[in-house]
Image (cartoon, rainbow, N blue to C red; front, side, top):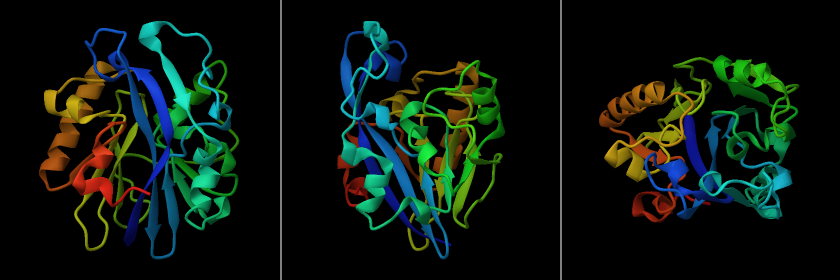
Length: 247
């Protein structure tokens, strides 16, 4: 049974808003939070995503020079490394039984290489896409203990994985049903912000049509009574519903 859900702030990133909201004119830079989530079950600890890679620590130019409309500037301190974030909760890397890699982007899978002992749960379409690249991204270690999981998988009672392709081929959102609490729907990067959700405007997509189908599915799930937490909304953490969950 899912006993506890912890929201972990893993740093920030400056990004051009045109990448968050399709149709926005380039040139407006916004600061977005990077999240991971700690899931505590009866006899298992799981982590959803692992934040940015260590190479981003103090290095806004991790991606080198970029065009204005493509701007991505990581804002990560050493304290934002996943091992340090877990340590503040009294945990070691080896305490994590499994990592759910929602997708392979740097701000979600960047710390995954530290988890040598844990199972790394990933959708087969995402793993295939990473393996098919001529050279895997620097933050991806293809030698980890990957375990393919498909739509509807429940790696822990109260945790259901939802294949939401669009942002990437194997992107996954996560439905959480903690004991004694309301369900939580982690949209991750299927929906970046409340603005994307409310106005039905997509963010950056590998496949826009697939992305729209995924969002429609998430809306159906939300209507059943789940509170939706978006992937990178700058203001959501300050909302009363979520403020006390953040740590």
